[in-house]
Length: 122
Image 1: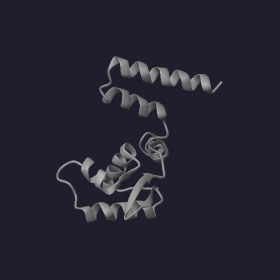
Image 2: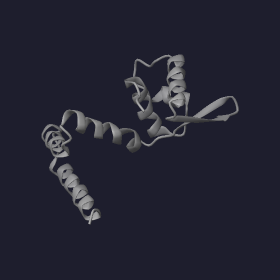
Image 3: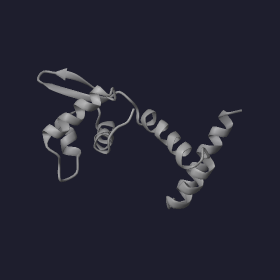
């Protein structure tokens, strides 16, 4: 599943706010805010793609994500590693840790995550 940049931005806010109404999404978006019709069109497309669902409450729709952030971005990251890093997670991690300007604490947290993953593979 692939989302446009605008859809991804809206999805980011939906993950943070869900469940929410269109007015909540509009309020969360930065200035200049898109038109309500633009948000409605994006939500319709995302519903058609199966990444957003809604529940009708009276005359309003309460929107929710049908896919988690991890489920959406996991394949994207795997594709990035395959396509741009010759299928080498180490090359990706090397660039990421060098260019992301991570603090010592953030690097230690990453190290712990890797240690935990190694332990879970035994």
